[in-house]
Image (cartoon, rainbow, N blue to C red; front, side):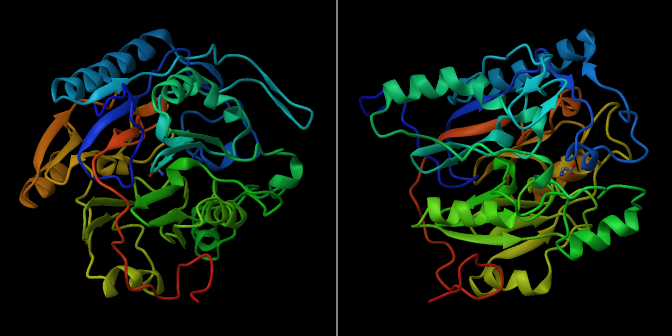
Length: 380
Ligand code: GLY
């Protein structure tokens, strides 16, 4: 590979994938309630009030599916690395807060944001996820040693004091109220300090589209804009989502010029302009094949659209999501069915469970016509 064992470089989610990290389920915990995770656990969820290590048989089943994904990618010539799980069932204690356990390392996408030759560990807005980047430390060290151009970066560590969260935000909150607050950009996280999760960022070359929601605040996006001065950072939000956490079951790019949008979480008109004036088509994703997520799962049934694009003509989709597979097949893509529902409760779908190390291509400008409406900085 051009003389180096590893070359880190990825600018988007659809160029041909060459090297990827696939998560592991070992030791994953359901973390205790904390100001931000109240947001994640739906009112009627079987996870309310439960916390601690997940049952071993479910961990084993999830790992089988994660290993299968890793093997499948390797067979297609893609280099695969795996994180080193910590014993997640340990308390997190900092000078500012403590919480009873950590979470896990099934979803590297939540933590690691690859932008060009850089991998940035996100701030993270859940207290239980404060140390999660450590599971990737060995890989980052290796990439650093093997690739002289690799930029190993870490966002400012947040303090996550009580000031980072609105007190009482979830007290007796209804779904209607949640939807109203999403539309009003009123989230549990305050603007006290920059906060973002990597999975709230959709990368398309020179443009980074960030979901403003429960896990990413405006200051987090401001920080990203200053950190990536050659990029254009945009703020997008999806008023139909009562739990707006992570963009990849809501707004998923498939290839240059084409994005799938969750039909229950439409991008508002004012924010569509940047796509329209640049000739991008936004299509509704197909309906999920399930009416419920699997037991003890944080995510919604819309993990159906959380697919892993391997190149603009090839995509991995969860094997039972027949509607989603059919839609992508009709769009001319080779669809690879991947059984993954046993892994969902550990942190999400096929996109969540992976993080890019390298894709082909360079930093393209796919939105040469910029308009007001989404940009973090006004257009000069
Ligand atoms: N935000 C992930 C989901 O829809 O489940």
